[in-house]
Length: 76
Length: 133
Image 1: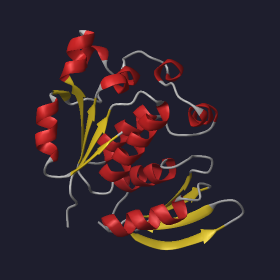
Image 2 (image 1 turned 60 degrees about the vertical axis):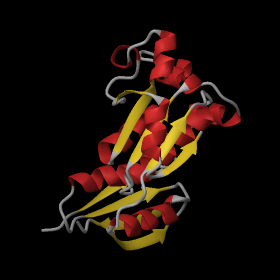
Image 3 (image 1 turned 30 degrees about the vertical axis):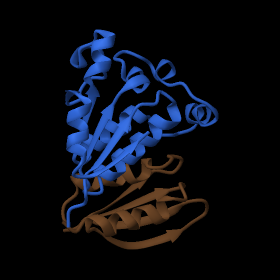
């Protein structure tokens, strides 16, 4: 059964949140989701761009009070 | 579709430039792009084994900001690029000769793939995109 884990990378600067996401995806199974929280504004566009490049799916992206939540599903 | 390999020639000892090289190399490597980094001139000094971050980096305005905020350490970023992507790091053989250093004795552990000459790096880079920092 697919799982969802949260990574709280708020306070880390570029490319810290992206690297934390990639490290988590490496250990995840196909279909699992990672919800990365980032206060780095660039992550909101960097993470979807990275997913499009390497073939993972962005399930949802939303802005909260001072941070972004981007949920990525491991696709391969 | 595989991307053109990226070749990064890092020669500056300025913290801001080393940081940029680490960001470019690691992000490219984790984005399915093969990366090779050639470290030469003053940049090599930042990779000296046993140095603390305070001794390792020198720079200007952003260097001061990097020290006080949660910015990923450049050496760690290079390491993450190697661990999570396809990336190789080479140190300039001429600089090692000048310093009388061995790459596996005097430089940061588990980061460099070995020494390399400039001619070999340039020949290899003909098949990709080369940037110099």
